[in-house]
Image 1: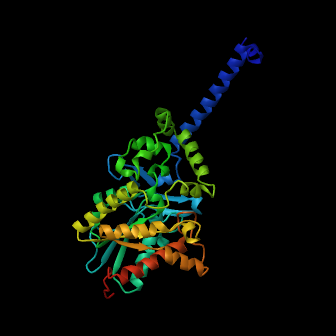
Image 2: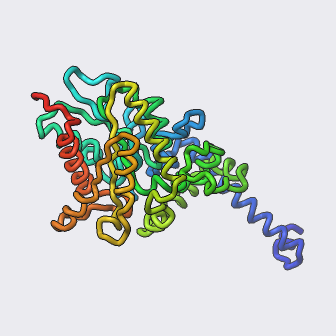
Image 3: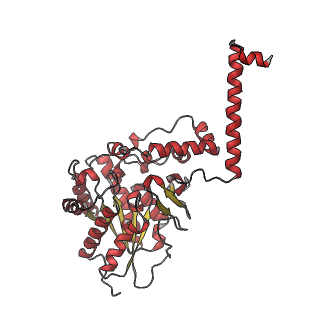
Amino acid sequence: MLRRALKGSTPAGVMLRLLMLLLAVLTTLGAVEIVLRASRFAFSAGTLRDLHELHPERRWLFGLRPGADVTLGATGGIRYRINDDGFRDRPRTPFPKSGVYRILVLGDSVTFGYGVPEDETFPQQLERALVQAGASVEVLNFGVNGYNPYTEAALFADRGAAYHPDLVLVQFCINDLADPTLHFDAQTRLHLGMIPDEAFPDPSKRRPLPRFPLLLRACRALRVCALMDDAWLAWRAQPPDAQDQLAALAPSNLDDEIRRAWLAARYGEIDQRARAIDAGFAVVVFPYREQVDGTAPAGVQAQLEELGRSEGWITLDLLPAFREASARGERSLFLDTWHPTAEGQRVAAEDTAEELTRLGLIPRLAR
């Protein structure tokens, strides 16, 4: 009778065949789930998510996962190793050695060094440039993918100041003025919930939380679903114009008083906390690719310098150095709209080293 029903074309037969098919799919997925759990399969290995962990109880919301060691095929097989303190850096002590001038760099994926080896990141190359110039100095990398001035200020107050730097540099990128949740996937936004208004350059333009939260949370609880979700996210990251699409969503200047006041408040927090530990403070403004080739306006650099003068901090503009390097026909300076190549990181580090020395911010110490 069951066989006749399966072969029949009646509504009951069609429904029975669909139920049998659904049962087979669920059985297969269940078996795969058991295998993944039993074999401790690293279902999220090779994705940016594997480098991070959420901390909704902290003002900085999320950070790098201590001890993470991930090789990303999407960035040409670059290996990203996170130290036990949760930063892409070699192990650091709370206090610098006697006679060593310590610089701490805050920033997003540009400072973190997305797409470049660890020893070619901006902080590492800045340290080498200053040491070669005769300074006894070390540079700490506190860059975290997806950070903006709000999370940078919170991280420095909560953790960075405990490393007792002599100078704090914060790296600015134009997407710091965009909605920070543009960097988050749906799961991240759900777990962090309604993050504070202070995290948004313009809170009135924040995106609503994803719909169907229970369904999304349930998906990540299943390794089969999480594996497919990671594959989907990796596939979405592949198109070469993905960063260009994001660039279109970022403001190109600080003309808006809301964004200007927000940036002044966030950098003011870092400056005030740095002063409390007798550290200097400066903003390093990284250009983006379209500014270097002249297809995008460069007014934000002048606006940041004006803001720095009015608020009492130093602003270092890297755009002239990038344009000079480009005019010399040096190797490609950008991986995409935002992220410098190792060569671009070198240009930024060497120009920053020269400017810091010229301004008298780096003591000339004997080796």
